[in-house]
Structure formats: C-alpha cells, structure tokens
Length: 459
Image (cartoon, rainbow, N blue to C red; front, side, top):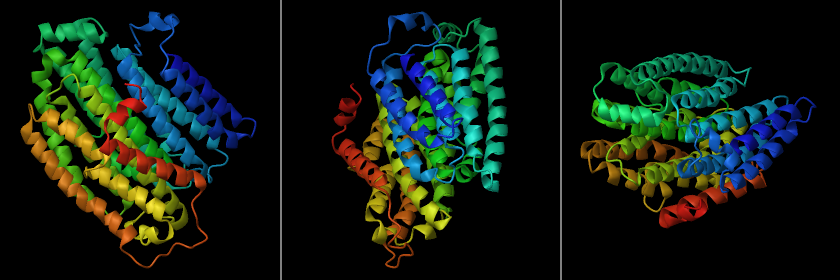
C-alpha cells in the first residue's frame, strides 16, 4: 500500500508538471518517484494498512513482483528522453499515464478479492488505450488505440460476467472463500461457467492464442517505448494475476479448466512461432515473440509446486530485461530510419556495436540459449511442467527451436552485412550505452549465477 501511495503522488506530480509547461521534468520526477517506491518496497508495510488486507495484501510475492516491475519501469523511463523527444508537449501525460498503469499492476500483485482484481486490470489497461494512440499523426497508432480499446472492452465484459457467476455461486468475492467453495463443489455448473469466462478474459490480457489477435497490430502501431512497457511491465502484471486467480481461487476445480488451458498453450506456441518466421518487420516479429512467450509462461500452471512463483518471477524478469534490450535498439533505429523492418538494422554492428551486442544477447536470451537468463528461466519452467505435461514441454521445445530462426534473422541483419547506412555522426547517448551494458551484464550474470536474482531482490 505504501508503494501505491508513492506511485500515485509521483504520477500526479508528473502530470501537473505539464500544466506549468515543465513537462520535460516529468521523466525526472518519475525516475525519482520510482526509486523512492523501490526503496519502500523493501520495507515492511505500515500497520496502518493492515485494515485493507481483505481487499489488498502486499505480501512477499506481491513485493517481489512489484520490485521487478519498478526496476523494468525505471529502465523504460531512462530510455524516454530520446524516445519521446517528438512528444515534447505531451511528455508529462505519457509519463504519468505509465505510472498510473503501473499502479494498476501493483494492485494486481496484491489483490485478495475479485473486485480488486477487476479494478487493477482496468487501472492497468485504460492508460494503455490512451498511450497506444498517443502518436496522433500516425494512422497505425490511431488504429492500435481503437482496436485495443474495443477488444479490451469486449474482454472486460467476459471478465465481469465471469465474476458475476462466481459471486452467484459462492456468495463472495474473496478468493479464499471462493477457493473453499471450489474444493467442496468443483463441478458446480454456474461456478465452472464463471471460471471459463474469466479464463477467456485473462487469456486475452496475456495474449494467449487465439485471443492474441490484437497484439501484432497494437504492438506495431503504438509508440515503441509504450510497446516496450506493454511487452514487459503489463505482461508481468497480467500473468501474475492470471496465475494467482486460477491457482488460488479456482484450485479445487483445476480438472475443469487445466486441459482447456493446455490446448490454448499448444495453439499459442505453434501459431505464434510459425507467424514469427513469416515476419520481415522487427517490431511485428517482437509482437509474435511476446505471444509465444505467453505460451511458455502458460506451462507454469502445470506441475505447480512451491517454486512456481519464483520460477514465474525469474522468467518474467529475464524476459523483461531482454525486451527492454531489444526495444532500446529498435527505438534508436526507428528514429533514424523511420521504419522497423529488418532492412533498417543492416550494418548496425559496424556503426553502433554496443547496441548490436545488447540486441543479440537479448534475442539469444529470449530464444533460451545457454549462459543467458532466458535459458535458466525456460529450464525452470520446463522442468516443473515435466511432472504433469511432458507433451506440452515437447511442443515448447519445438517452439523454441522455431523462434531461434526469426531471432537470427535480426542478428544476421546487424552483424553480417558489411555495408552500413548509419552515419558516423549518429551516435547514441551515454544513457543508452549505460543501460545497454547493464542489460548485457544482468542477462549473462543471472544466466551463469541464477542465485544473483535472489540477492538482487532480497529473497
């Protein structure tokens, strides 16, 4: 709760900095507020907030995912100075909207009530609808906004209808009461129908196929920094909420929904990786990559044990680091080339070797190549799922093999074209170089010594 207070005050200050034509300071206000929130997240909650535990419980798991989201958001804010230099009149709004969306994420990490879950999802999503269309002169950005809004509203209808049926069956919104009901009445028809509707809604939020159709167009049309935020922080919040509600509230009825989820995971892994192979645009390829990672993450529901939350956190942190690493390069190339096709990246290693290296390391981590954080993350989840879903693990391994091909397409464009169209005068800022080094070191260090993840987040 203390983190929420800090983030809210920071978001309001960032927003009002634009009122006094000081929008350029919104990023610095946001960075300062995020650092304070990160410090607060390591402190025990004030006793004053204990009265809200029936709706909001900032426990150890919530604190872990909050810390991860704050670190990733900090990296994204550091990239904003260059990414948003064409949004000078709207910087305060964009930074404050990201902070408000982050507030929704923190609520999702701590919900103990389906009403709080709904509020968290809406607080997370509504700013995203606006940010996706913030590039008002770009028709693709306008299309991304309206498509995301309409499909998001449709998914919200499923979520509310599902919550209504759950309440009608159990007489409560509390996840612990619902869990007790699910154990005693696992096959109750109204209850199971409510679970299915909520499953569809959450599958949309995390981009599981076939509910992923919004992702490629929205990811490509939204401003690249916003896409990076959606592919990392939003993914962290949505997937943890998905995992928490299905395994905490509906654990007693797991036999009724786990096979359906398994089918969605198979469709996601095969379809997303196959579509990724067909892409010639880096941003759209990353959209299908994000969908495929939702499939890998879906394995966390199978063979769940006491380490599942840790495995989920490790995977989401490793994936988010890699996402920021690729998008920082994409943002820079897009600014110079006005496009994000693979062709635009040709010869990047010759003019900006550090950007090319961080992109290559990030893509290899996404593919799950050994000595990277992504390999350890996939290994942990695959090993867990082997206990109850070996066939799904086989599909996931095939999907990972397919993904290497389209990740290599981008790496080849950067490193194996001797001619470069980048001018020697076009150099990245010191901030980008520092972040690039940090991401390279973090991905490799956690990949080689996974226990550093525990040390970093005080586990």
